Length: 482
Image 1 (spheres, rainbow, N blue to C red):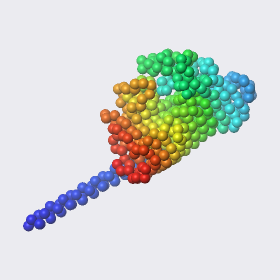
Image 2: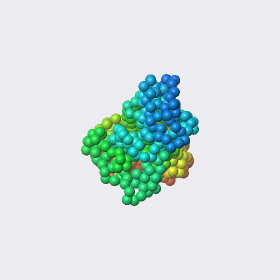
Image 3: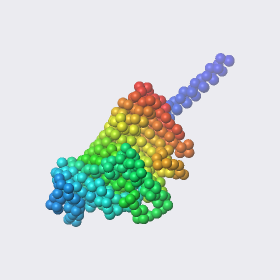
Image 4: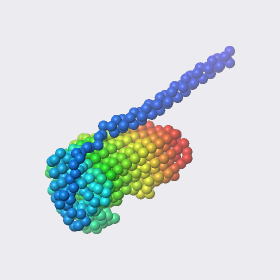
């Protein structure tokens, strides 16, 4: 009788255990299936974004700058000739403004509607290093804060259907003897006791003006304030292309689409190792494709932005639908980065088929914000990434990014949905994942699928991260489990 009761109890327990195990297994399969389907849907979404972005088209008319008085290979200011060609081209309905073979000196170049500014192979624009040549001041931005400052070297404001193309070179001629020294760093030519951007009336004053709600039109800087201009800036533009050119020696950020929509950066080579020489910084921008480019920079190769602190919250505009394909990154602080100027938020970033490799590349995928910036970073999808070497981390997500002193505030950021798939790393540096969130706002949903990382010191270092998942992921030869 006792044996029968024991058998009956064991049978019930076993049945319940089996049922529970099956349910647990089914639940796990269901969660994995949902995540897998979510990833597939995101990549489908990327394809629909690509289809929506069209290359600008131009009439078959050519305006050679030489016909407007430009002179090559001589100390001659070609600004007037280039400006005249651009204005006439646009006035006549658009076409191509041609820079033929040769070296042409110039001040700031401002684009107009329906103009393709095209540099022939062996054509080079040499931009002046005299700050006075970038007057009058224009509406622009410095590290996520809008103001009136020197014109970017190539600038378009509120223009449609514009391009910079060709196999020529844009040479900012920046170096330790001019623009770079303003950074207040001795390795870039700054001498102690000379003025720089860190002086109280310069960068700090600009940030304070934004915090105090001073209108942009009254944030007047320029001469005497040592805030460097961006190289190529598209401000509030639509249907933009920059293709195949080589850009070297930038004063500051290299390519900066701000408040722009439908932007294609294709086949551009950037080689510029100055301070804050980010390669491409889409800011408050939507539907941006960066593809087939090579980055060798003094800062982040690609850095997606959306405004700094109060100014970002004033504008309140996301950067979204940013696609990076078939790019190669060498030197840089980060390969593909979001932040730190991120107050407006970033959604839907897709990175695929890229290569990163340099002993001077700090981090492959980098997200940086803090409680002064705030903002939401969501939906960052990466696949088919080949990494040779990074110094610090394959993935770094940091809610406590600290630069320019105290960065504590009341705007707690959010980071959600980071997905890396089919990634191989030969030398992973210090960490595979370095992630730090807030207790009240943990980083949510990091997935590594089919990832192989070799020669890394630590698997990960995390703080306040929810739902970290590893699927078929090997680090230092060992399968990593959740």
